Image (cartoon, rainbow, N blue to C red):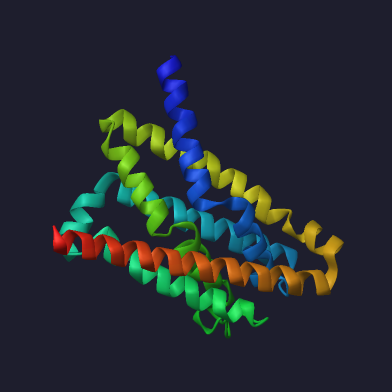
Length: 206
């Protein structure tokens, strides 16, 4: 029992550090600030549902998916880093990224990109899920998905109540938060790119 509790806590802390729901709440608030409350909830629910399904797929079929398409986690990390950097760059300049600009009836597409991919279900989250699920067989997959489902509920609550934070900090505060989040996301994207590049270089030299 103690070993299971230790594993649960370890998996939760690993996912929490990688997915960082607190920081992503600020990003979510900046992306949906001009949308009505009902649509914000729909976007949050859609983003987290897609995120969970992606993690389920990679937890169960991760190695097969990568082998099928002939890709590596390092290549995914580099691509995700570039996407996160672009989103962060546009937020740093005080406006949304063209990567997730909404037009017509596709306003909820922001839930797919950049929220679900690559912010929530990014290379780091996918790699973490694959690592935890692969190390424990069926029980490892079950624990990984259960913990991640709980974290998705926590993140959903943070997203839903992000409006209260906005009402406190106001428009000027939102602008500051948006730019700060943009800087953080740009740095995260750069770090993801560097990590992926260094891993590829290291494997090529070994």
